[in-house]
Image 1: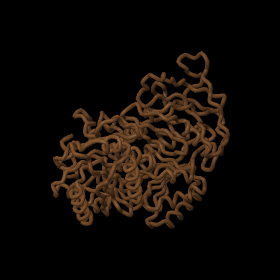
Image 2: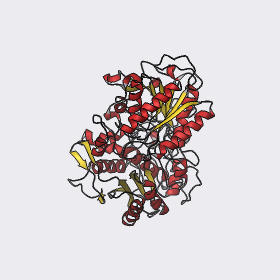
Image 3: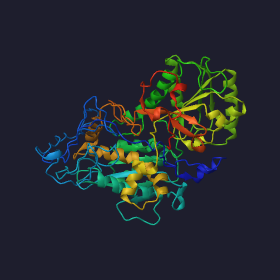
Image 4: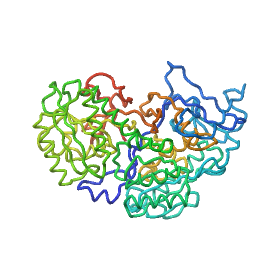
Length: 586
Protein backbone atom coordinates (compact mmCIF):
# COMPACT_ATOMS: atom_id res chain seq x y z
CA UNK A 1 0.00 0.00 0.00
CA UNK A 2 1.30 3.45 -0.83
CA UNK A 3 -0.01 6.79 0.30
CA UNK A 4 -1.03 8.89 -2.65
CA UNK A 5 -2.90 12.13 -1.96
CA UNK A 6 -2.90 13.81 -5.38
CA UNK A 7 -2.33 17.57 -5.63
CA UNK A 8 -4.02 19.87 -8.11
CA UNK A 9 -0.58 21.15 -9.05
CA UNK A 10 0.46 17.62 -10.02
CA UNK A 11 -2.63 17.24 -12.19
CA UNK A 12 -1.81 20.41 -14.11
CA UNK A 13 1.66 19.11 -14.82
CA UNK A 14 0.34 16.08 -16.63
CA UNK A 15 -1.35 15.74 -20.00
CA UNK A 16 -2.53 12.33 -18.86
CA UNK A 17 -5.45 10.81 -16.94
CA UNK A 18 -5.44 11.46 -13.18
CA UNK A 19 -2.83 9.45 -11.35
CA UNK A 20 -2.52 8.27 -7.81
CA UNK A 21 0.72 9.95 -6.82
CA UNK A 22 1.74 10.90 -3.33
CA UNK A 23 1.95 14.53 -2.46
CA UNK A 24 4.29 13.62 0.31
CA UNK A 25 4.66 9.88 0.19
CA UNK A 26 7.29 7.67 -1.34
CA UNK A 27 8.02 4.04 -0.77
CA UNK A 28 5.65 4.32 2.16
CA UNK A 29 4.75 0.68 2.09
CA UNK A 30 8.08 -0.50 3.33
CA UNK A 31 7.84 -2.07 6.73
CA UNK A 32 9.04 -4.61 9.21
CA UNK A 33 12.44 -5.43 10.64
CA UNK A 34 14.20 -8.82 10.76
CA UNK A 35 16.76 -8.23 13.46
CA UNK A 36 17.96 -9.62 16.74
CA UNK A 37 18.03 -6.78 19.22
CA UNK A 38 18.96 -6.11 22.83
CA UNK A 39 16.51 -5.23 25.57
CA UNK A 40 15.59 -1.58 26.17
CA UNK A 41 16.78 -0.24 29.45
CA UNK A 42 14.46 0.58 32.30
CA UNK A 43 15.10 1.45 35.89
CA UNK A 44 17.09 -1.38 37.55
CA UNK A 45 14.27 -2.13 39.95
CA UNK A 46 11.73 -2.86 37.22
CA UNK A 47 11.05 -6.16 35.50
CA UNK A 48 9.93 -7.06 32.04
CA UNK A 49 6.70 -8.93 31.58
CA UNK A 50 8.02 -11.31 28.93
CA UNK A 51 11.30 -13.01 28.19
CA UNK A 52 12.00 -12.80 24.45
CA UNK A 53 13.16 -16.11 23.02
CA UNK A 54 16.12 -16.21 20.65
CA UNK A 55 15.99 -18.97 18.00
CA UNK A 56 19.00 -21.19 17.45
CA UNK A 57 21.26 -20.24 14.54
CA UNK A 58 19.77 -22.89 12.28
CA UNK A 59 16.18 -22.17 13.24
CA UNK A 60 14.06 -20.20 10.81
CA UNK A 61 13.09 -16.99 12.59
CA UNK A 62 9.43 -16.10 12.81
CA UNK A 63 8.00 -13.60 10.31
CA UNK A 64 9.15 -10.14 11.20
CA UNK A 65 12.51 -11.25 12.51
CA UNK A 66 13.84 -13.12 15.51
CA UNK A 67 13.70 -10.31 18.05
CA UNK A 68 15.56 -11.09 21.20
CA UNK A 69 16.70 -8.38 23.58
CA UNK A 70 16.93 -4.72 22.62
CA UNK A 71 19.04 -2.08 24.27
CA UNK A 72 21.90 0.33 23.94
CA UNK A 73 24.51 -0.76 21.44
CA UNK A 74 28.00 0.54 21.02
CA UNK A 75 28.42 3.75 19.05
CA UNK A 76 30.92 6.38 20.01
CA UNK A 77 29.55 9.05 17.73
CA UNK A 78 27.72 10.84 20.52
CA UNK A 79 27.96 11.09 24.22
CA UNK A 80 25.09 10.60 26.54
CA UNK A 81 24.28 9.73 30.10
CA UNK A 82 25.27 6.18 31.06
CA UNK A 83 22.57 3.67 30.27
CA UNK A 84 20.68 1.99 33.03
CA UNK A 85 21.38 -1.74 33.16
CA UNK A 86 18.71 -3.88 31.50
CA UNK A 87 16.03 -5.21 33.82
CA UNK A 88 16.15 -8.80 34.96
CA UNK A 89 13.25 -11.18 34.58
CA UNK A 90 11.41 -12.37 37.61
CA UNK A 91 12.86 -15.78 38.43
CA UNK A 92 10.53 -18.73 38.57
CA UNK A 93 7.53 -17.02 37.01
CA UNK A 94 5.92 -19.34 34.44
CA UNK A 95 6.37 -18.17 30.85
CA UNK A 96 8.80 -15.50 31.93
CA UNK A 97 6.01 -13.27 33.19
CA UNK A 98 7.20 -10.68 35.66
CA UNK A 99 5.47 -9.73 38.86
CA UNK A 100 4.56 -6.26 37.60
CA UNK A 101 1.30 -5.81 35.69
CA UNK A 102 1.44 -4.77 32.07
CA UNK A 103 0.75 -1.18 31.18
CA UNK A 104 1.33 -1.90 27.48
CA UNK A 105 -0.60 -4.44 25.40
CA UNK A 106 2.19 -6.46 23.81
CA UNK A 107 1.58 -9.22 21.26
CA UNK A 108 3.29 -12.09 19.49
CA UNK A 109 5.86 -14.73 20.30
CA UNK A 110 8.46 -13.49 21.02
CA UNK A 111 6.33 -10.62 22.34
CA UNK A 112 6.66 -7.18 20.76
CA UNK A 113 5.05 -3.81 21.34
CA UNK A 114 2.44 -3.98 18.58
CA UNK A 115 1.13 -6.13 15.76
CA UNK A 116 3.67 -4.59 13.41
CA UNK A 117 6.60 -7.05 13.27
CA UNK A 118 9.00 -4.12 13.02
CA UNK A 119 8.00 -2.95 16.49
CA UNK A 120 10.57 -3.58 19.22
CA UNK A 121 10.37 -6.36 21.81
CA UNK A 122 7.89 -5.97 24.61
CA UNK A 123 8.61 -3.67 27.51
CA UNK A 124 5.19 -4.07 29.04
CA UNK A 125 5.76 -2.29 32.34
CA UNK A 126 7.67 0.77 33.50
CA UNK A 127 7.21 2.69 36.72
CA UNK A 128 10.64 4.13 37.46
CA UNK A 129 12.31 7.51 37.46
CA UNK A 130 12.80 8.59 33.86
CA UNK A 131 15.32 11.25 34.76
CA UNK A 132 13.09 14.20 33.95
CA UNK A 133 14.66 16.68 31.53
CA UNK A 134 17.26 14.46 29.91
CA UNK A 135 17.56 16.59 26.74
CA UNK A 136 15.98 19.63 25.10
CA UNK A 137 12.38 18.97 24.15
CA UNK A 138 12.20 16.30 26.86
CA UNK A 139 10.92 16.58 30.40
CA UNK A 140 9.44 14.20 32.91
CA UNK A 141 5.99 14.35 31.28
CA UNK A 142 6.51 14.68 27.52
CA UNK A 143 8.68 14.57 24.40
CA UNK A 144 7.95 17.35 21.91
CA UNK A 145 8.02 16.37 18.22
CA UNK A 146 7.40 18.69 15.26
CA UNK A 147 6.12 17.63 11.83
CA UNK A 148 7.22 20.15 9.19
CA UNK A 149 4.82 19.93 6.23
CA UNK A 150 4.41 21.62 2.83
CA UNK A 151 1.83 24.34 2.35
CA UNK A 152 -0.41 25.66 -0.33
CA UNK A 153 -1.18 22.43 -2.20
CA UNK A 154 -4.70 21.19 -2.84
CA UNK A 155 -5.04 17.44 -2.44
CA UNK A 156 -7.83 15.15 -3.53
CA UNK A 157 -8.59 11.54 -2.74
CA UNK A 158 -9.72 11.84 0.86
CA UNK A 159 -13.15 11.97 2.46
CA UNK A 160 -13.52 15.73 2.08
CA UNK A 161 -12.69 16.07 -1.60
CA UNK A 162 -10.36 18.99 -2.31
CA UNK A 163 -8.30 19.93 0.75
CA UNK A 164 -5.67 22.65 0.61
CA UNK A 165 -2.82 22.62 3.08
CA UNK A 166 -2.67 25.94 4.98
CA UNK A 167 0.42 28.13 5.22
CA UNK A 168 2.36 29.42 8.22
CA UNK A 169 0.08 27.48 10.55
CA UNK A 170 0.77 25.59 13.78
CA UNK A 171 -1.43 22.75 15.00
CA UNK A 172 -1.07 21.30 18.51
CA UNK A 173 -2.27 17.70 18.31
CA UNK A 174 -2.66 17.43 22.07
CA UNK A 175 -5.56 19.88 21.78
CA UNK A 176 -9.04 18.87 20.60
CA UNK A 177 -9.52 18.27 16.89
CA UNK A 178 -10.93 21.03 14.73
CA UNK A 179 -13.43 20.69 11.90
CA UNK A 180 -10.96 22.32 9.51
CA UNK A 181 -8.04 19.98 10.30
CA UNK A 182 -6.33 18.89 7.10
CA UNK A 183 -6.22 15.18 6.23
CA UNK A 184 -2.53 15.11 7.20
CA UNK A 185 -3.40 16.41 10.66
CA UNK A 186 -6.22 13.90 11.02
CA UNK A 187 -3.83 11.10 10.14
CA UNK A 188 -1.16 12.25 12.55
CA UNK A 189 -3.69 12.38 15.38
CA UNK A 190 -4.30 8.67 14.81
CA UNK A 191 -0.62 7.85 15.04
CA UNK A 192 -0.02 10.08 18.06
CA UNK A 193 -2.59 7.99 19.86
CA UNK A 194 -1.47 4.62 18.50
CA UNK A 195 2.23 4.92 19.22
CA UNK A 196 1.80 6.49 22.65
CA UNK A 197 -0.60 3.74 23.67
CA UNK A 198 1.40 0.83 22.30
CA UNK A 199 5.11 1.75 22.54
CA UNK A 200 7.12 2.13 25.75
CA UNK A 201 7.91 5.81 26.29
CA UNK A 202 8.88 5.52 29.98
CA UNK A 203 6.16 7.68 31.41
CA UNK A 204 6.39 10.44 28.80
CA UNK A 205 3.72 11.50 26.32
CA UNK A 206 5.18 12.03 22.84
CA UNK A 207 3.48 15.28 21.92
CA UNK A 208 2.92 16.00 18.19
CA UNK A 209 2.92 19.48 16.69
CA UNK A 210 2.44 20.24 12.99
CA UNK A 211 3.75 23.30 11.20
CA UNK A 212 2.69 24.02 7.60
CA UNK A 213 5.42 26.09 6.00
CA UNK A 214 5.01 29.56 4.53
CA UNK A 215 4.22 30.07 0.88
CA UNK A 216 7.57 31.75 0.27
CA UNK A 217 10.27 29.48 -1.12
CA UNK A 218 14.02 29.70 -0.87
CA UNK A 219 16.73 28.88 1.64
CA UNK A 220 16.29 32.08 3.66
CA UNK A 221 12.58 31.40 4.18
CA UNK A 222 13.40 27.90 5.40
CA UNK A 223 16.05 29.17 7.82
CA UNK A 224 13.70 31.81 9.20
CA UNK A 225 11.02 29.17 9.77
CA UNK A 226 13.50 26.90 11.53
CA UNK A 227 14.49 29.66 13.95
CA UNK A 228 10.86 30.49 14.68
CA UNK A 229 9.84 26.82 15.00
CA UNK A 230 12.67 26.15 17.41
CA UNK A 231 11.90 29.13 19.61
CA UNK A 232 8.20 28.31 19.70
CA UNK A 233 8.26 24.50 20.10
CA UNK A 234 11.84 23.62 21.14
CA UNK A 235 11.34 20.12 19.76
CA UNK A 236 13.35 17.04 20.60
CA UNK A 237 12.95 15.91 16.98
CA UNK A 238 11.55 17.23 13.72
CA UNK A 239 10.11 15.12 10.90
CA UNK A 240 10.34 16.93 7.57
CA UNK A 241 8.03 16.70 4.55
CA UNK A 242 9.10 19.81 2.64
CA UNK A 243 11.13 19.50 -0.56
CA UNK A 244 12.08 23.15 -1.04
CA UNK A 245 15.47 23.80 0.59
CA UNK A 246 14.76 21.37 3.39
CA UNK A 247 18.46 21.05 4.16
CA UNK A 248 18.66 24.78 4.93
CA UNK A 249 15.89 24.26 7.48
CA UNK A 250 17.52 21.18 8.97
CA UNK A 251 20.91 22.83 9.20
CA UNK A 252 19.46 25.43 11.55
CA UNK A 253 17.66 22.79 13.60
CA UNK A 254 20.66 20.51 13.88
CA UNK A 255 22.97 23.32 14.96
CA UNK A 256 20.55 23.60 17.86
CA UNK A 257 20.74 19.87 18.58
CA UNK A 258 17.34 18.85 17.20
CA UNK A 259 17.11 15.30 15.85
CA UNK A 260 15.77 14.83 12.32
CA UNK A 261 13.66 12.00 10.92
CA UNK A 262 11.66 11.71 7.71
CA UNK A 263 12.59 13.71 4.66
CA UNK A 264 12.56 10.63 2.42
CA UNK A 265 10.15 12.25 0.01
CA UNK A 266 9.69 15.43 -1.92
CA UNK A 267 6.16 16.53 -2.71
CA UNK A 268 6.39 14.83 -6.10
CA UNK A 269 7.14 11.38 -4.76
CA UNK A 270 10.56 11.12 -6.46
CA UNK A 271 13.35 9.96 -4.18
CA UNK A 272 16.44 7.76 -4.49
CA UNK A 273 18.14 8.57 -1.20
CA UNK A 274 20.18 11.20 0.59
CA UNK A 275 23.94 10.83 0.56
CA UNK A 276 25.77 9.14 3.41
CA UNK A 277 27.70 12.39 3.91
CA UNK A 278 24.42 14.16 4.62
CA UNK A 279 23.76 11.85 7.57
CA UNK A 280 27.35 11.91 8.79
CA UNK A 281 27.57 15.68 8.96
CA UNK A 282 25.32 15.50 12.02
CA UNK A 283 25.98 11.96 13.32
CA UNK A 284 23.27 10.71 15.62
CA UNK A 285 20.99 13.64 14.81
CA UNK A 286 20.01 12.61 11.25
CA UNK A 287 18.07 9.36 10.83
CA UNK A 288 16.51 7.99 7.66
CA UNK A 289 14.18 5.07 7.10
CA UNK A 290 15.23 4.41 3.50
CA UNK A 291 18.81 3.57 2.53
CA UNK A 292 21.33 6.26 1.71
CA UNK A 293 21.88 7.04 -1.96
CA UNK A 294 25.15 5.12 -1.97
CA UNK A 295 23.62 2.07 -0.32
CA UNK A 296 20.69 2.07 -2.72
CA UNK A 297 23.02 2.44 -5.71
CA UNK A 298 25.00 -0.58 -4.50
CA UNK A 299 21.83 -2.69 -4.27
CA UNK A 300 20.92 -1.71 -7.83
CA UNK A 301 24.33 -2.05 -9.43
CA UNK A 302 25.07 -5.35 -7.70
CA UNK A 303 22.10 -6.79 -9.59
CA UNK A 304 23.35 -5.30 -12.85
CA UNK A 305 26.87 -6.59 -12.24
CA UNK A 306 25.77 -10.12 -11.33
CA UNK A 307 22.69 -10.70 -13.48
CA UNK A 308 23.09 -8.41 -16.51
CA UNK A 309 26.70 -7.59 -17.39
CA UNK A 310 28.08 -11.17 -17.53
CA UNK A 311 25.21 -12.56 -19.62
CA UNK A 312 23.89 -12.20 -23.18
CA UNK A 313 20.66 -10.41 -24.03
CA UNK A 314 17.68 -12.47 -22.86
CA UNK A 315 14.45 -10.45 -22.56
CA UNK A 316 14.65 -7.93 -25.41
CA UNK A 317 11.90 -7.42 -27.96
CA UNK A 318 14.31 -6.58 -30.77
CA UNK A 319 15.12 -10.10 -31.90
CA UNK A 320 18.64 -9.90 -30.49
CA UNK A 321 18.33 -12.32 -27.57
CA UNK A 322 21.46 -14.40 -27.26
CA UNK A 323 23.67 -11.57 -28.52
CA UNK A 324 26.20 -9.76 -26.28
CA UNK A 325 24.60 -7.03 -24.23
CA UNK A 326 25.32 -3.39 -25.03
CA UNK A 327 24.36 -0.97 -22.25
CA UNK A 328 22.78 2.44 -22.57
CA UNK A 329 22.59 4.88 -19.62
CA UNK A 330 19.45 7.03 -19.38
CA UNK A 331 18.88 9.67 -16.71
CA UNK A 332 16.99 12.84 -15.82
CA UNK A 333 18.93 16.09 -15.88
CA UNK A 334 16.24 18.00 -13.98
CA UNK A 335 17.66 20.71 -11.68
CA UNK A 336 14.75 20.08 -9.31
CA UNK A 337 16.09 16.59 -8.60
CA UNK A 338 19.90 16.88 -8.46
CA UNK A 339 20.15 13.60 -6.55
CA UNK A 340 19.12 11.81 -9.77
CA UNK A 341 22.32 13.06 -11.42
CA UNK A 342 24.31 11.97 -8.38
CA UNK A 343 22.73 8.53 -8.59
CA UNK A 344 23.53 8.33 -12.31
CA UNK A 345 27.20 9.12 -11.66
CA UNK A 346 27.38 6.50 -8.93
CA UNK A 347 25.70 3.85 -11.10
CA UNK A 348 28.01 4.55 -14.03
CA UNK A 349 31.05 4.25 -11.78
CA UNK A 350 29.95 0.96 -10.21
CA UNK A 351 28.86 -0.68 -13.45
CA UNK A 352 32.07 0.26 -15.24
CA UNK A 353 34.05 -1.04 -12.26
CA UNK A 354 32.52 -4.51 -12.73
CA UNK A 355 33.27 -4.60 -16.45
CA UNK A 356 30.12 -3.05 -17.88
CA UNK A 357 30.54 -0.65 -20.77
CA UNK A 358 28.02 1.95 -21.92
CA UNK A 359 27.67 2.14 -25.66
CA UNK A 360 25.57 5.32 -25.39
CA UNK A 361 24.23 7.77 -22.83
CA UNK A 362 21.25 10.15 -22.96
CA UNK A 363 19.27 12.43 -20.66
CA UNK A 364 15.89 14.13 -20.56
CA UNK A 365 15.13 17.51 -18.96
CA UNK A 366 11.98 16.93 -16.89
CA UNK A 367 12.08 14.05 -14.42
CA UNK A 368 9.68 13.33 -11.63
CA UNK A 369 6.29 13.44 -13.28
CA UNK A 370 4.60 11.36 -15.94
CA UNK A 371 4.41 14.47 -18.10
CA UNK A 372 3.67 15.16 -21.71
CA UNK A 373 6.40 17.81 -21.79
CA UNK A 374 7.35 18.72 -25.36
CA UNK A 375 10.97 18.90 -24.21
CA UNK A 376 10.77 15.33 -23.00
CA UNK A 377 9.13 14.17 -26.23
CA UNK A 378 12.01 15.57 -28.22
CA UNK A 379 14.59 14.26 -25.74
CA UNK A 380 12.99 10.82 -25.74
CA UNK A 381 12.92 10.62 -29.52
CA UNK A 382 16.56 11.67 -29.72
CA UNK A 383 17.63 9.29 -26.93
CA UNK A 384 15.92 6.25 -28.40
CA UNK A 385 17.34 6.99 -31.85
CA UNK A 386 20.85 7.25 -30.37
CA UNK A 387 20.42 4.02 -28.44
CA UNK A 388 19.08 2.13 -31.44
CA UNK A 389 21.90 3.41 -33.67
CA UNK A 390 24.49 2.37 -31.05
CA UNK A 391 22.95 -1.09 -30.86
CA UNK A 392 21.97 -0.72 -27.20
CA UNK A 393 20.25 -3.91 -26.05
CA UNK A 394 19.78 -2.93 -22.41
CA UNK A 395 18.78 0.46 -21.00
CA UNK A 396 20.03 1.21 -17.47
CA UNK A 397 17.73 3.88 -15.99
CA UNK A 398 18.62 4.98 -12.42
CA UNK A 399 15.44 6.87 -11.51
CA UNK A 400 13.45 9.82 -12.83
CA UNK A 401 10.02 8.78 -14.10
CA UNK A 402 8.97 9.80 -17.64
CA UNK A 403 6.50 8.00 -19.94
CA UNK A 404 7.83 9.58 -23.13
CA UNK A 405 10.91 7.38 -23.10
CA UNK A 406 8.83 4.24 -23.60
CA UNK A 407 6.40 5.99 -25.93
CA UNK A 408 9.18 7.22 -28.19
CA UNK A 409 10.83 3.80 -28.14
CA UNK A 410 7.55 2.24 -29.25
CA UNK A 411 7.13 4.83 -31.99
CA UNK A 412 10.59 3.93 -33.28
CA UNK A 413 9.80 0.18 -33.14
CA UNK A 414 12.64 -0.14 -30.62
CA UNK A 415 12.03 -2.51 -27.70
CA UNK A 416 15.21 -3.10 -25.70
CA UNK A 417 15.65 -4.55 -22.23
CA UNK A 418 15.06 -2.03 -19.41
CA UNK A 419 16.58 -2.29 -15.93
CA UNK A 420 15.13 0.56 -13.87
CA UNK A 421 15.79 1.87 -10.36
CA UNK A 422 12.60 2.40 -8.38
CA UNK A 423 12.22 6.00 -7.24
CA UNK A 424 8.74 5.95 -5.73
CA UNK A 425 7.07 6.45 -9.13
CA UNK A 426 8.84 4.01 -11.44
CA UNK A 427 8.03 1.13 -9.12
CA UNK A 428 4.27 1.76 -8.92
CA UNK A 429 1.74 -0.10 -11.00
CA UNK A 430 -0.09 3.13 -11.80
CA UNK A 431 2.93 4.51 -13.61
CA UNK A 432 3.83 1.27 -15.30
CA UNK A 433 0.35 1.24 -16.80
CA UNK A 434 1.09 4.60 -18.47
CA UNK A 435 4.04 3.22 -20.40
CA UNK A 436 3.92 1.85 -23.93
CA UNK A 437 3.03 -1.71 -22.99
CA UNK A 438 4.76 -3.30 -25.99
CA UNK A 439 7.97 -1.67 -24.74
CA UNK A 440 7.47 -1.97 -20.99
CA UNK A 441 6.85 -5.71 -21.06
CA UNK A 442 10.64 -5.96 -21.40
CA UNK A 443 11.27 -4.01 -18.17
CA UNK A 444 12.59 -4.90 -14.71
CA UNK A 445 12.71 -2.63 -11.66
CA UNK A 446 14.81 -2.81 -8.49
CA UNK A 447 12.83 -1.52 -5.50
CA UNK A 448 13.00 -1.44 -1.70
CA UNK A 449 9.24 -1.97 -1.53
CA UNK A 450 7.99 -5.11 0.14
CA UNK A 451 5.24 -7.36 -1.16
CA UNK A 452 1.92 -5.67 -0.41
CA UNK A 453 -1.57 -7.10 -0.48
CA UNK A 454 -4.76 -5.79 1.11
CA UNK A 455 -4.89 -2.48 2.93
CA UNK A 456 -6.14 -4.30 6.01
CA UNK A 457 -2.90 -6.30 6.21
CA UNK A 458 -0.61 -3.27 6.24
CA UNK A 459 0.77 -1.94 9.55
CA UNK A 460 0.02 1.71 8.77
CA UNK A 461 -3.62 0.87 8.10
CA UNK A 462 -3.98 -1.38 11.14
CA UNK A 463 -2.44 1.23 13.44
CA UNK A 464 -4.77 3.97 12.21
CA UNK A 465 -7.86 1.79 12.53
CA UNK A 466 -6.83 0.72 16.02
CA UNK A 467 -6.68 4.36 17.05
CA UNK A 468 -10.06 5.06 15.43
CA UNK A 469 -12.07 2.13 14.02
CA UNK A 470 -14.24 4.61 12.11
CA UNK A 471 -11.29 6.25 10.29
CA UNK A 472 -11.97 6.36 6.57
CA UNK A 473 -9.95 4.07 4.32
CA UNK A 474 -9.22 6.89 1.86
CA UNK A 475 -7.86 9.20 4.55
CA UNK A 476 -5.63 6.44 5.89
CA UNK A 477 -4.19 5.17 2.62
CA UNK A 478 -3.87 8.54 0.89
CA UNK A 479 -2.64 10.65 3.81
CA UNK A 480 -1.98 9.01 7.18
CA UNK A 481 0.30 6.28 5.82
CA UNK A 482 2.62 9.02 4.52
CA UNK A 483 3.98 9.40 8.06
CA UNK A 484 3.87 5.88 9.44
CA UNK A 485 7.37 4.53 8.74
CA UNK A 486 9.06 7.69 10.00
CA UNK A 487 6.90 7.87 13.13
CA UNK A 488 7.58 4.21 13.85
CA UNK A 489 11.32 4.75 13.48
CA UNK A 490 11.13 7.68 15.90
CA UNK A 491 9.15 5.74 18.52
CA UNK A 492 11.44 2.74 18.15
CA UNK A 493 14.36 5.07 18.85
CA UNK A 494 12.62 6.46 21.92
CA UNK A 495 11.99 2.96 23.25
CA UNK A 496 15.49 1.59 22.59
CA UNK A 497 17.03 4.70 24.17
CA UNK A 498 15.50 3.81 27.53
CA UNK A 499 14.39 6.30 30.19
CA UNK A 500 17.44 8.54 29.76
CA UNK A 501 16.38 9.93 26.39
CA UNK A 502 19.01 11.88 24.47
CA UNK A 503 20.80 11.56 21.11
CA UNK A 504 23.53 9.41 22.60
CA UNK A 505 21.20 6.81 24.12
CA UNK A 506 19.12 6.66 20.95
CA UNK A 507 22.25 6.29 18.81
CA UNK A 508 23.49 3.40 20.90
CA UNK A 509 20.07 1.75 20.82
CA UNK A 510 19.77 1.87 17.04
CA UNK A 511 23.32 0.62 16.56
CA UNK A 512 22.62 -2.37 18.78
CA UNK A 513 20.63 -3.89 15.91
CA UNK A 514 22.89 -6.51 14.29
CA UNK A 515 23.35 -6.96 10.56
CA UNK A 516 20.89 -9.63 9.51
CA UNK A 517 19.18 -10.61 6.27
CA UNK A 518 15.43 -10.52 5.94
CA UNK A 519 13.56 -13.74 6.57
CA UNK A 520 10.26 -12.63 5.04
CA UNK A 521 9.08 -11.12 1.76
CA UNK A 522 7.05 -8.67 3.81
CA UNK A 523 10.00 -7.57 5.94
CA UNK A 524 13.01 -5.54 4.79
CA UNK A 525 16.36 -6.02 6.43
CA UNK A 526 16.87 -3.06 8.75
CA UNK A 527 20.04 -2.36 10.66
CA UNK A 528 22.54 0.42 11.19
CA UNK A 529 26.18 -0.22 10.31
CA UNK A 530 28.99 1.74 11.91
CA UNK A 531 28.79 5.32 10.73
CA UNK A 532 25.40 4.60 9.13
CA UNK A 533 22.10 6.23 10.11
CA UNK A 534 19.57 4.66 7.74
CA UNK A 535 17.41 1.59 8.15
CA UNK A 536 16.42 -0.40 5.04
CA UNK A 537 19.28 -2.39 3.52
CA UNK A 538 17.71 -4.67 0.93
CA UNK A 539 15.59 -4.67 -2.21
CA UNK A 540 13.67 -6.99 -4.49
CA UNK A 541 13.51 -7.26 -8.29
CA UNK A 542 10.20 -7.06 -10.16
CA UNK A 543 9.30 -7.58 -13.82
CA UNK A 544 6.49 -5.92 -15.72
CA UNK A 545 3.56 -8.07 -16.76
CA UNK A 546 1.47 -6.06 -19.23
CA UNK A 547 -1.52 -8.35 -18.63
CA UNK A 548 -1.26 -8.68 -14.84
CA UNK A 549 -4.49 -7.75 -13.00
CA UNK A 550 -5.91 -6.83 -16.41
CA UNK A 551 -4.10 -3.48 -16.51
CA UNK A 552 -0.48 -4.44 -15.95
CA UNK A 553 1.49 -4.91 -12.74
CA UNK A 554 4.97 -5.35 -11.35
CA UNK A 555 5.42 -9.02 -10.45
CA UNK A 556 7.82 -9.76 -7.61
CA UNK A 557 10.51 -12.17 -8.81
CA UNK A 558 11.19 -15.28 -6.77
CA UNK A 559 8.01 -14.57 -4.86
CA UNK A 560 9.36 -11.17 -3.66
CA UNK A 561 12.50 -12.55 -2.03
CA UNK A 562 14.73 -9.73 -0.81
CA UNK A 563 18.47 -9.31 -1.30
CA UNK A 564 21.25 -7.27 0.27
CA UNK A 565 23.77 -5.54 -1.98
CA UNK A 566 26.08 -8.21 -3.31
CA UNK A 567 23.69 -10.98 -2.34
CA UNK A 568 22.01 -11.65 -5.69
CA UNK A 569 22.24 -15.26 -6.89
CA UNK A 570 24.14 -16.07 -10.05
CA UNK A 571 22.37 -16.41 -13.37
CA UNK A 572 20.81 -14.13 -15.96
CA UNK A 573 18.10 -11.66 -14.98
CA UNK A 574 15.74 -12.84 -17.72
CA UNK A 575 15.66 -16.31 -16.17
CA UNK A 576 14.91 -14.90 -12.72
CA UNK A 577 11.16 -14.62 -13.20
CA UNK A 578 8.36 -17.19 -13.01
CA UNK A 579 4.73 -17.09 -14.04
CA UNK A 580 3.83 -17.76 -10.41
CA UNK A 581 5.44 -14.52 -9.22
CA UNK A 582 2.77 -12.42 -7.46
CA UNK A 583 1.64 -8.97 -8.56
CA UNK A 584 2.71 -6.38 -6.01
CA UNK A 585 -0.09 -4.06 -4.94
CA UNK A 586 2.44 -1.45 -3.77
